[in-house]
Image 1 (cartoon, rainbow, N blue to C red):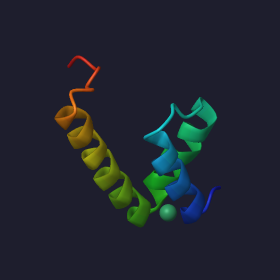
Image 2 (spheres, helix red, strand yellow; image 1 turned 30 degrees about the vertical axis):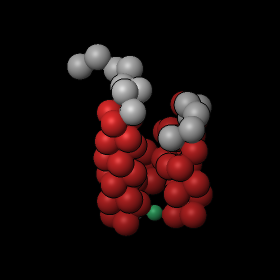
Image 3 (tube, rainbow, N blue to C red; image 1 turned 135 degrees about the vertical axis):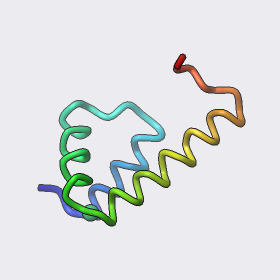
Amino acid sequence: MMNCKEANQLMSQELDRKLTWRELAALKFHVTLCDGCANARKQVSFIHHACKHAFGLEDEKK
Ligand SMILES: [Zn+2]
């Protein structure tokens, strides 16, 4: 299992590129077991979505 440092690296890489399914699976697995990283991921994805929205880069239709 990855450690918190690796999880955090993947979280920031996730903003720049699409993670492989393997990386994503490992990251998801880590955040289900690690509260610290789960919170960090929530914040990162919130900021990411807020930025995408602000710059008009939102490409997902919901
Ligand atoms: Zn962690």
